Amino acid sequence: MLTESIIREKLSTVRYPGFNRDIVSFGLVKGVHLDGNNVAVEISLATRDASIPRQIHTAALEALKTLSGVGEVKLNFDIKEPPQAATSSDTLGKASIPGVKHVIAIGSGKGGVGKSTVASNLAVALAKTGATVGLCDCDLYGPSIAHMFGTNERPMANDQDQILPIRSHGLQLMSMGLLLQDASPVIVRGPIATKYIQQFLRQCAWDNLDYLVLDLPPGTGDIQLTIVQTVSLDGAVIVTTPQEVALIDARKAVAMFGKVNVPILGIIENMSYFKCPSDGIDYHLFGKGGGAREASRLGVPLLGEVPIEISVREAGDEGRPIALESPDKSTSSKAFHDIAAQVIKAVARKV
Image (cartoon, rainbow, N blue to C red; front, side):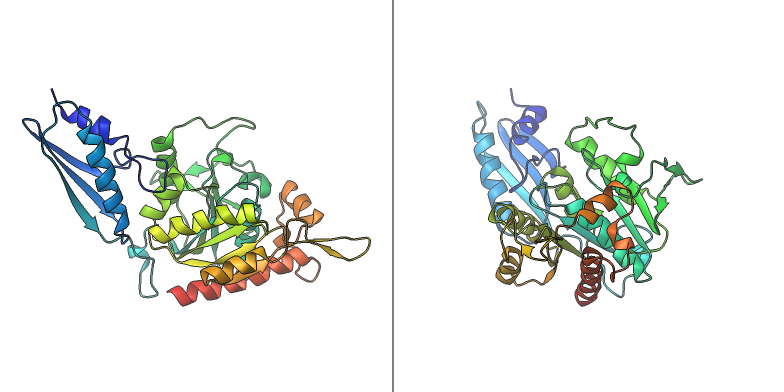
């Protein structure tokens, strides 16, 4: 005998196009109605991509038709406009995250490209312009922001039960790494992980931020999808290295943001080259010009090229991001400060 739980269990095999999570766990199935063996399902989506409801319709219909004894199947879709990025006329009351004017996501298609290093230094460089900046580490499973800022201070709560961000090097910080003992793993499934991230974003007492930088996990999984679907992002910055294997995955990240109408502010090519201190020659260890070619292909700015420097690694290990150094003293620091200027202009153009 068909029941609602059986129908929902079968629909839980239907993945949201391009992602790992299913339409039931995302809360897209709003109702299941049974009339004998006939089934009607209400599905709600927030997207401008007409191919997404078509793909879900086909997959859900095929899944339900495999149930024994099922009769007529009707799938009713409620298609809504996705959240819009904040505009210059928006007030803080209309912002999706209280206390925040602009939200910038830093993403990558794969791990190992230095995304957290870029996010940390970009946030510092933005703050050096006089802006009030926050940095939220959205990677629950491999949080690194706390270490990069040299703090193990535990966040406290205010009288409204809001989390008070930690302040370090002029930034407001939130990271799972601030809540864990050293080497303690985070073992949670997708729905709980996304709940933690929502708490970090909306239950944090962000204090009148001009920019909140989100350091996303690598890839295009549950946490990333939840953020781009529920947070009004002003734009995304894609971090890659020059070699093709990294660019392939960077394109997936670009496609993810495109599906939910998040503008790409530009591409940052990290580990662009290594300047040998002994001979002064630039060695392109991971290839040359990959970031520029990809930016041109996508029609977005190449925000900057960050070299490989021992000082960048040392600064991160010591808890003092290299962007804290004067741009006159560090090639990498200068690169991050130049990138920050480009990001500010890109956000201004979008709003």
